[in-house]
Image (cartoon, rainbow, N blue to C red; front, top):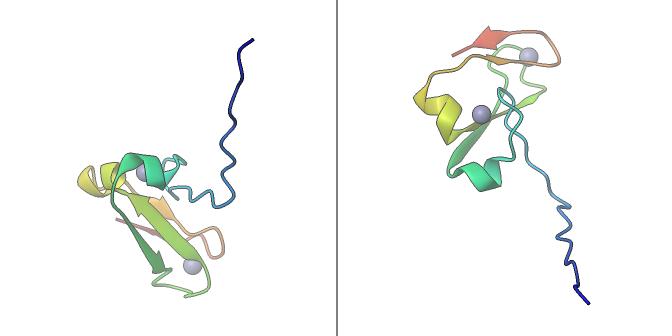
Length: 64
Ligand SMILES: [Zn+2]
Ligand SMILES: [Zn+2]
């Protein structure tokens, strides 16, 4: 009988830009929104390299 081990991800850190779990992507950066300062922006290595835009969910600020 096969046993399936389920890994519970209690601390799912998602990239603000692409939505992938940053822990699986590599290094990532976290910073507060430079416009309103009340939302945490998280960017994975991939989005950083591609300079993908991020958007603040609080104020709608978009930045590279
Ligand atoms: Zn990303
Ligand atoms: Zn903001």
